[in-house]
Length: 121
Image 1: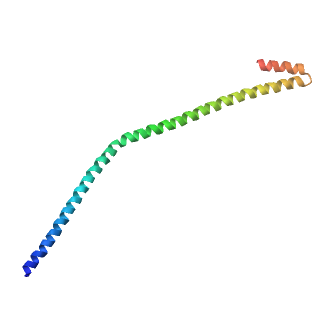
Image 2: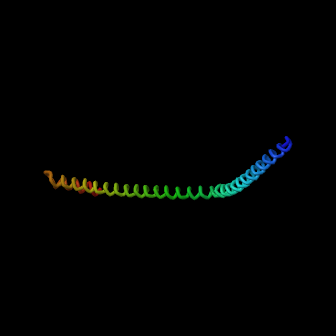
Image 3: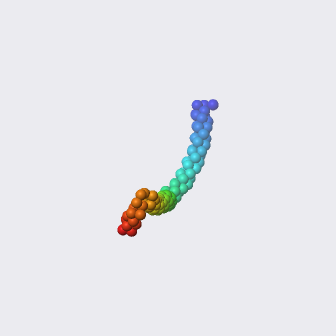
């Protein structure tokens, strides 16, 4: 076999391997391009939906915290009502104590008269 024939055989082998490599590389490139386009479309759908998701999340948080604020406001109002009732009971208790003192001390009729004058005025 001459040098040219050996070179021709080698070239055919290299050309065949190069052809196979190019076919495989092209197939991989086409598959990667297809995946890129599919991912890009999915990514764009997610990005386009982001403002809607964000507004929904904001609305949910607003509802949650508004419910907490309303609950605390009601609790505060109940506390204020309880305090007013307690103060009224304390005033009644002070009146009872003052009445008892007025009736239990010597000269109780005079003390009772003073008590009646002070409580009506």
